[in-house]
Length: 64
Image 1 (cartoon, rainbow, N blue to C red):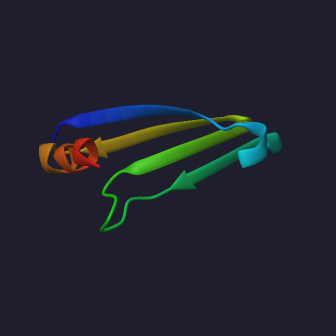
Image 2 (tube, rainbow, N blue to C red; image 1 turned 30 degrees about the vertical axis):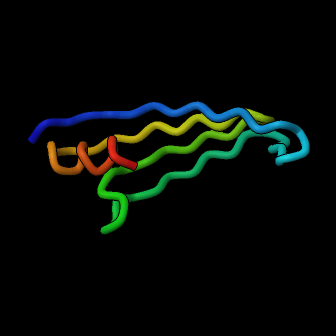
Image 3 (cartoon, rainbow, N blue to C red; image 1 turned 90 degrees about the vertical axis):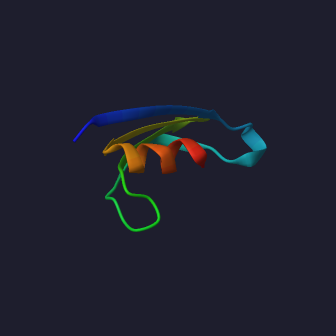
């Protein structure tokens, strides 16, 4: 199987939310999202690193 990854960066304005400190979350794959995700939140910035396997799951990820 082919391994692939995705990287997303999101900036929130102060009135939309803020994280004091650092938040680290790990989400395992399920039926709706067949890939693993690591989410890091620091102040106004959210970084999401996704890792998956297979071309079918890659197509689902790219079409979201």
